Every structure is written in structure tokens, then in C-alpha cells.
Image 1 (tube, rainbow over the protein chains, first blue to last red):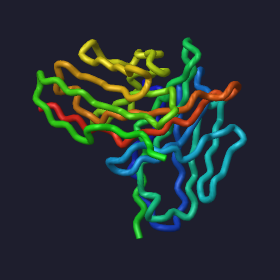
Image 2: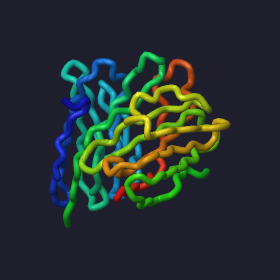
Image 3: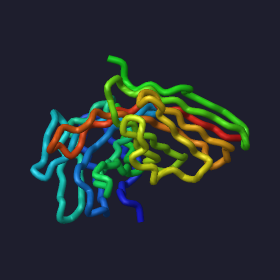
Length: 113
Length: 118
């Protein structure tokens, strides 16, 4: 079983639609949670951190449920420029005192005119 | 400020050859990480340097992979001899030392090196 599971998609939505992505993680040592965005043949870039209280950044809302080990990302009013792969990422505490990032396979979003 | 840079952007080699990838982190970032994404799979952690010291190399696939960070600045990842299954995109990331009480400091990724082993 993968440590971070995501639906690979693709999710095909029209401009202006609302779309939601979900992700589950299995490691209870997970400390921090993030959504990264990766454009085709580019590097991953941090989109937003995810908190239990929920956090919003413009059209993007992220939510964490620690009890269910579940993370979500909601995108409202989709734009063509939102087309990308969205990576669910978990930061896991190691015995060394440092951390490492564990990635999901990503969910591909295609927004059409 | 310059971001993380990686060289080369692409490398095509034959099975059995040697390839060396280079990563220059953001200036002042003590933490340097190597990751790899093989076709159809998720990005996976390879190893973590703090300055010149290997902090965690639990993700290195086997002893054909050797990473170094002499002087605590740039890092190299050598694959010798390369095998077909080594093909993929190798990402480097760097981050500052996290302030006391902060569990995570953002990692900034380089553009990656796309390695193809024929």
C-alpha cells in the first residue's frame, strides 16, 4: 500500500467549475501536509500548506482530517491556467530528528474552455 | 535570487555507462535533497544532506548510486553503471534550516534532470 494515495484522474472540467481532490495517508508519524502543483515537465511547486482548521487562499481551499488521515483540495471557479497535476505531499518525522517528504502520484486536472 | 539549478537538463546514455548529475541549491540553504520520479510512479525521496553530511540516505536504490556534497555547497549524484530502470527525472531540492519550534521549512525544487538509459 502506498503511503500517500491519490486518484490519478484526469479530472476534465469546464472553466468556472468547482473541483475537489482527495488524498489519504497511512503514516501516523506524518507531521505536515501540503498540496504541490506540477506543470508538465516542470518541477513541483508548493501550492499551499494544509491545516486541521482548514485554510483558504483565493479560489483554493485545503482541509486536513487527522482522525481519518484524509486531505482535500477544493478549487472554485476553475481557470484554464489551473490545468496541472496536483500532488498531495506529507512530511514525515524521522528518527534522526529530520523530516522527509512523501509524495502521492498526483491528480491531473484539465480545465477546458 | 537564483533558484535551485540542475545540470544537465537531459541526459541520454547507454546501459553500463556512468552519469553524474549536479545540483546547485539556493545560496545559504544547508539542507539539500535528491528525489526521483520514474515513469508512472510517484516522486520518491533518495537522500538528504545537511551541509556536507549525509543525514538520511534511506531512499537510495542501491550501491550504484553515489551522492556527494563536498564543502556543503553543490551536490553531485553519480550513477555507475547505469541500468535501464534508472531512467526517470531526478529532482534536487533545498531548504533553509528550520527555526527552532518550526517542524518544516519549505523545500524549493530544481527543474530536474531527465535521465534516459538505453
